[in-house]
Length: 228
Image 1 (cartoon, helix red, strand yellow):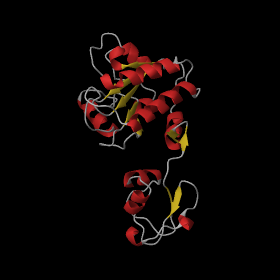
Image 2 (cartoon, helix red, strand yellow):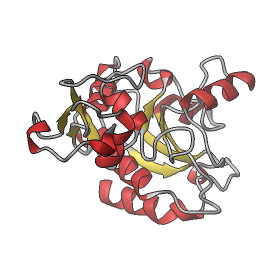
Image 3 (tube, helix red, strand yellow):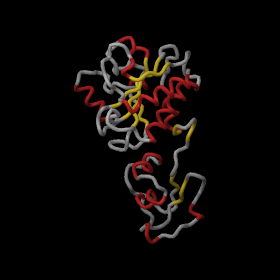
């Protein structure tokens, strides 16, 4: 098993990858490189924990503009309506945990036929990985959001939700990093016809909410100022 294996520089096949040695386990490799089994399985499209000696594993995300390469590819793959989107509205889930699948189910139970109300969701390590960005079906289909009361804002605003209750505690550093990378990418990648304005949910008129919580106020104000 991994505890009986010695560090071997020859095991590296390329920067950001690792060549599996005899006796290695996925959990042992995850521990060695300060990552998780879930992340390794996602990066290498593994359906189980089974690995074989000689197999090369990706152990680090390939990043573009601070976002994983596969995430950027998925964002660009959508049939983006460049003239549709004018705003970004940032939310918190007001829950301790969750992921795109669980919120999609909850929103469908509330009568939302398109499921997950947001276009993007950023995990906090409870239900999905800390800082992991999940792309919702509303972005993939370029559908209106369901994240605010206003049908006008839902029709022209990209909804981004961070898992957590930020009226009670701060978002994680990884969540904030993912949010900043995503907002900057949407703003500067040339995907949009116009510059997107950034708001916290409670800044939208007549919404009557504390979302996304007091611990997000400074972050949103800073992003709005930087992005003009």
